[in-house]
Image (cartoon, rainbow, N blue to C red):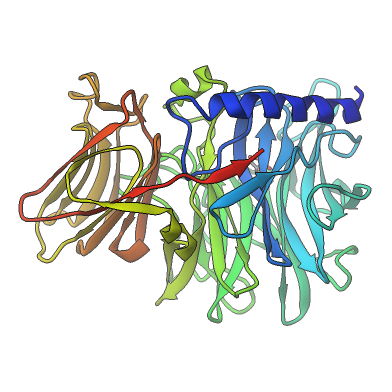
Length: 476
Ligand code: FRU
């Protein structure tokens, strides 16, 4: 394949596709979507010289996902974005079957990008225990539009014994000792774990340790990330194979964090906390910006779910990124709030419960009671003060009424919430993010509605504050 031509063809495809898909009914106003085709994990998140880089896993030619490239948005204010073109393609023998997920580390203005080069050997293999190479590759860039040569800094021979072929998603960070890298893995006996490597020059890496939970917690840990906020460290990861419970782990795969002790071992006294309790959230990544803020962006989608995004697939695209969320610490819990920059999206205060388009809806709850907030009758957020539980649900009986919201297989997601104080809903055309109690619990979900009119029904005695929202400005 002529890879230079392939990238040019993709650029032409994006420039044709985005103007078309951005006019379709479910095109998003303030969530980043792929310029064409399919998007998954956020990758390489960083700020360099006042410019935020948002790379992502990308299959531009197929809305149902295919070979993985990296796409790339830049922004300075989280309101206006420029899409700079596909950044990397699987053009090398080190990454022939996909430029998989990875991270960025900024040093002296240069962006060091580490990612997994996925290679499937030809032959009769199962590709879980045999037949797959996972190369940890470094490329450097100044601005995310051009990369130097791909260099493998770790290959299968550098990983510990006893591992399956599933080892991926390097995240690089720095602690008091120097540069560290965390990689996600699946052992041969199907236990999720992560490895830590260390480096003094960002190029040569040596194995430090393997971290696992006392009790097995799923068969694979994807997209690991070590974050230290106000002196407390957390291991964020996306485990696969954790059994569902009524109020936890309800999606096919999860994303959340363990608290860590000083030596990065898991603090077993603190339970794993999920980042998001909604239907559509996976593979988040964090970074620290030049102002010192910790920022998380997730994939507003999930692989292998039994619900779909059929309406956007029909339009030639699928999935989005969540809003960028600032992380702060309250006790052992990480609080998530959309970045302050999004306040600039507010357009007008709306004094009615019916409006058209996108909105920010805030509700203050003064007494402990049952609450129900419905959008177009069928998308419901409710709180049960006896069970001390919140839920996001698609009302199956109403979904087929005219103008109703439809979940395309999404049913209900619940979360334990000690008491309900406030709710903030960011309602995009086909995506919703609900921040409960100032961001202590969050639900992200896609939803589908054929009309632009939205109508709120809310428990008597409560008055929402509603602002209509403007949309991002996207330059393709
Ligand atoms: C998570 C993930 C990563 C992998 C990437 C491939 O969604 O499976 O582990 O690197 O997607 O697109």
